[in-house]
Image (tube, rainbow, N blue to C red; front, side, top):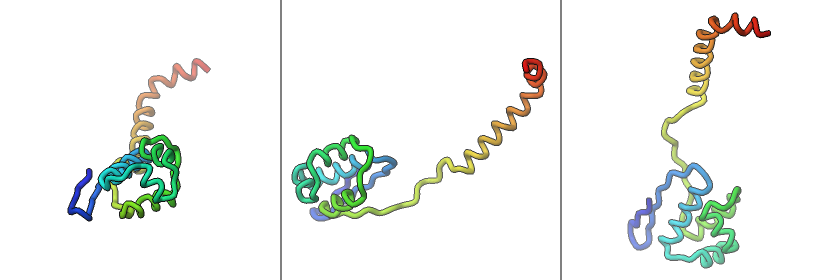
Amino acid sequence: MVKVVSDSILCIKYSMNDLPELGRALAALRKARKMTQKELAALSGLGQSTLARFETGGVAEFGSRKLLRLLEVLGHEMSFTPTRQGFTLDDALAERQAEAANALQRSPAEAPRRSQQR
């Protein structure tokens, strides 16, 4: 989401879970500033093709120094917020334990067949 608060203040709120989403968020910031990839790349010391690949999700890795420099040129900084409560490791463990208990409940009927096959 891009929100222009005033001529000099721009707010972008993105929920970013992967590198391509981060690239798209940066592209939105750049476009809101009415900058071309070439301009932003030159001001941040990157190649235009590197910036283009980042914005379109074409990179597997992107260094933190590059990202912070791009944000600095765009007049932004990075901040962190807690994520919504989602599926946790405790949830995964409970799910696995339930599956194991269900398998044990089914296995007595199957046990004689298994032992005969061995």
